[in-house]
Structures are given as C-alpha cells and as structure tokens.
Length: 218
Image (cartoon, rainbow, N blue to C red; front, side):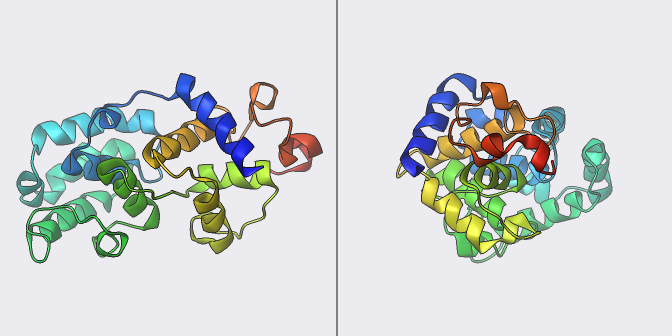
C-alpha cells in the first residue's frame, strides 16, 4: 500500500505542483522567511508579502535590525501579529553564537530558534539542505488519515502516529519534492471541504472515498 500510495502521488506531482517564488531558490534566508510566513496561512496570500519582505530586508542582518512595528505593518495582511517579533528574534539569534549567521542543518538546532516548530524545521531541512525530512501539518495529516484509514489525535501536528506515518510513506530521496507534492495535493485535491474525490488518483484504495465522504466530518 505504501509503495502504491507513494507512486500515485509522485506521478500526480510531476504534473501539478504549484509555482511560488520561494520554490525557485535554496537560499537559507529566503526560505526561512517563506516558511515563517507560510505558518497557518494560504500560500497565495503569502506571495506579495514574501516579496516585499525580501525587498525591504534583503539580508539576515537587515531583518535583525528591522523595526518591529514597520515589519508588522508589512506582515499585517497575513494576520498573526506576533510573526514580526518572531522573525526578528530568529534573525538576531542566527547572528549570534553558535550560528554566526548560518542556518543550522540539524532539527535539534533549528527547533531552538524562535517561531520554529517541527514542521518548519523539517521543511527547512528538506528544502534548504535536501535532507530526508518528512513534514506533517493539518493538510498532510488529512491525506494520511483519509487514505490510510488512520485516526490521529486532536492536535495533528503533534501526533506520534501521524508523524510515524509521514516518515514511513516518504521516499528515500527527493523528500523536498515529496513534501511539496503532499502540500499541494492537500490544497488542490484532498481539501478539507469539498474534496475532489472523483479526480483523486488515490480514490480506488482510499478509506475516505470507499466509506463515503458524507460519513466523515470535513
């Protein structure tokens, strides 16, 4: 089942991945900014804000020196008012010891940065350093639960069962692309509301599809 699940999604991803500016770079600073802005926010809403942040604060040093009120105004369209504080705090932390201006390449070190949780840390490991680090958010959890018939806890992003499943289904290489495939599949096909089950490549073995979407809560 895992091999089939993986191959179906990889084939879908070859034709359907979305194009966002942060997906065209491996720059650690740009991707740190992107991942912080993407937290709990739709990707299409992040695009103009991401571009403006990089234009106003093109380097880690610029971001560390940013006025939080000014940065907060730039980030206002995304909500979550604490984001400006966390971004500047992360930038300042990275400029000090032991990082010396370099984004760390281990999960343990990344988790020490302000505003960086497990998802963000693993996203950075896969996108910046091309490490085999699977991610889990509400969208990925939804795909795993629906298709594989799993039942995670209330807080999906912290559920050990779902994290284990995310690791188990990830391929041995190009996990960066795999993570993007899951994210986009959750946004475009396996949506929380009104999922596109008839055009889903997983539908023939999907628990959610077989049992009937009407038996599940969105």
